[in-house]
Length: 258
Image (tube, rainbow, N blue to C red):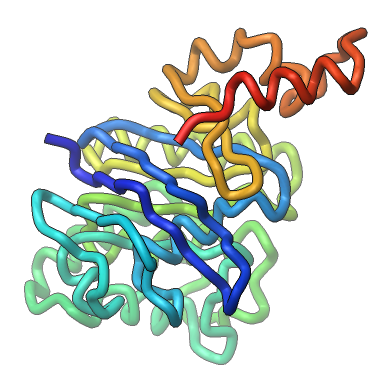
């Protein structure tokens, strides 16, 4: 049984349909990535799963660890073991690094477990220990991203959802962040759903991938296969091709599925 199972959801913003019959399945212990252009609906998928859309999905179901979570409050969803790192980090800028981390563990009562998890996090991001008393708003972009990930980890999640963790970071920091994402998955056994515009980097660490366009999945498969797919290389990895615009349109019609 999949840890997260999304079936045929449709999500609207007012009268605009953002997701059109989207289905995906995430196996426990894996890294799954969703790639696609701006406005494709990637963030909407995560917000829908987390219950952050004002209007709940008109259709479809969302199941986590065998239980329905669609229609539930975000707080209840977090308690069940899902954590979300939003695009743009969204740290509490006027709180210190330590206070931000405490916010990540506010639902927990196992102080010893929180302390152990915090020490584990400091092995991933030692700079956060050094910046513990510093206001989060004064951190660099990369340090804020580290803080946002750490705050989500302190919820002790089974599934960690990350929205554009490389956004605005230098190439060096992007490599560091993705290396740590792999460690979190392999060493801590945390399942990860990763939304990324850096398709090559995301597919290089993922087990499985989905390609999203205009609220629909166009293609899915093992990440290693998608990396070698000629169409994915052309449209998302920047590999040049001599195919015409009409050929691209034919490919989109051929690959579309629900």
